[in-house]
Image (cartoon, rainbow, N blue to C red; front, side, top):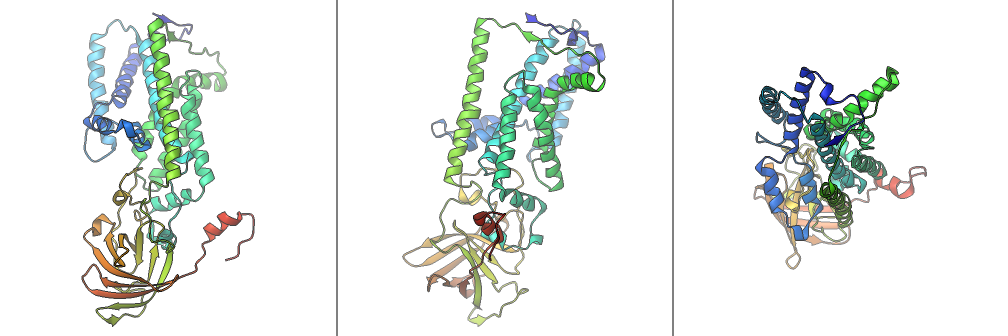
Length: 448
């Protein structure tokens, strides 16, 4: 049973319009259903007793995948082909054309909540500014031309924490508006320009999330379209327009079930996920390794003396062997600047890794420096360095670590080519405009 005060219903559409509805109903239904093994593998791999925000995030980003290799519009083509076949079968069998209003209503409910999950997942990562992290010392000492377009965009966003949080707040508000039928069109209207900008940014800066952002745009259009048409008729054409007041009549247990499901959704995807994301923010940025680096040694060091096999190499911008400078991060990353070619890696999609070895954000989308993770043998004063770039993963350095004082370090040992090396590092008292501006406030004068 259903209650309907709107005279313009799906039952009044002609055959071709109803055929179009059938196609889009099947198309979006397939897009929403967890029909491949990837979703279920992740679901059953979650430790529900130690739930992390990354677990909820990956659940929220699910899309059906028929071809390997990540998100692709090829999957959309396959889904459209399946929907077309289903439409043909449906059209040939369903002559009475009944229950279309109910089908549209419930599909729109599912689309609203799926869309809400998508924007809330990214919204909390921005609200607690983690999606674009603060710039590292190594990146600050990398020439602008050595960054990809995507990395420049991400680094720029990472340094405006307030703006990033504002963007997250917009997504959260839009997601919450989707949870109520009366405000869903407003939420979808907010998402369309917001996610449309994300989509265009991904295309312009060669990002990897353009398929998923297009997916959210498609869901937003489905939610907003009926009210968008009514608004156009009312405001632009100045025609009398009736609101859509169709809603199914629910019996007692259905009303209870609806309330329970909605409450569970809010508790899980809003309150719990928001709390877990806040906890993650307090623990530190998920893009950078968690293992601490050498105490008090973070900074950039000039390599004042460098020997290979007991032969001194003068400072050179073109020598592929001679080190020019070294950066120690606050975490256990050491980056080396030389003219030795770097085969860059890319990390264009949002990933939340548990293991430090997988957290390659600092070196992704850049060249000019080689990035190493290191382990310190504090007793023997020895550093074991492993290249963090998967294209240079076989490279390892074993170096003796001798801090002469607070600003001078001597490294000696074996490099990646098994040559003996000796390097004298002198810490530079370098100030960075971006950090000084954050300390003093952008409206005040800076002294560097």
